[in-house]
Length: 108
Image (cartoon, rainbow, N blue to C red; front, side, top):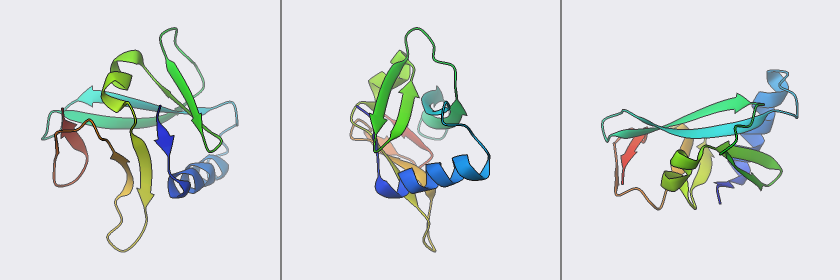
């Protein structure tokens, strides 16, 4: 399962509304190689599911990930911080053995 915090849900809904993104779109979460710790997260809006996609819904937000990325993302929460030191979107990933200081990449 992939989870979405209340603040992340609010921000996703606001982005969809401001960008005139239809409800048929979903949030695609991917893990790609790169970053100072080896792996990085990628977020996009998409509306085309692929055959091996894993589909979840939390708090009314549909989250889709490919099978390979899901292996790194099991039980991960998408969070959002908008305070003075806010990071924007970030992941609380219990599978990560280390993360970089900026929070953009991780290792398992």
